Length: 331
Image 1 (tube, rainbow, N blue to C red):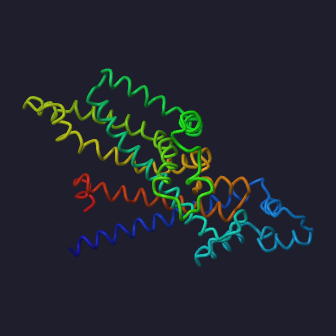
Image 2: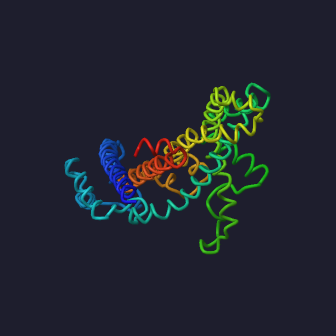
């Protein structure tokens, strides 16, 4: 028992050090890129006010924001405030950055979680079907569909889905996370799911093809192995072979791809949320980038990096559950 807690503590410490190091590197790179942005944040802030600003007032705004300070000094000032729990205030929304992230992340999490689960389940099932019917008509048809969806951009697919299912067929709303004109506390669960369905389906189609194709190839390798040949000689059927020998061997690569798709999913959500006008982190970071809202842009960048790191850490911890050999090697 003590050895298990010791290993767990050592693993947690290792991952914590890696995550902190990565977040520091991401913060430096993001701050440098934002510093070289051609968009003037002060000018964008003044345009957002909608009123005339004198040169003296502009100078006061620049001094308050520290725009004229050296980049290194500005970075360490921002980092010091961040370590105190102050993520800054958004120049675009006039609210604390952490409040915006916590509010928008709930919508983005629901969207990404639905798309992530849907893409994983559909991709894994279709990959198994293609592998079991290798080079037959189900495999050929599904493989062409996967190749087609892998080459289609998310925003184009979203626009087509809006045109077909929202405008023509009117099965789904055009956008937003709730009906227009309805108070937030009056929105029902069904209405939220109805608005969530089309963006989630669009986002899931972006990554399920990759999982399906990799699962197919891994299953084909397993079915061509010697121990499967021995199982066939014993009279086991193909679906029994899949259940007893195939699933355990193809589950780990599929799990790796599924958790590795966190970063891709986060990037795809930016496109999907803008196409469907869905109020999540993706639409917030797009608005922050276009308006040079530096505090919000840096905050969302760090938060998304932390989200992806935690997802990869969970994947590594699940490896030992799925494959005990990995746990034995780690021990």
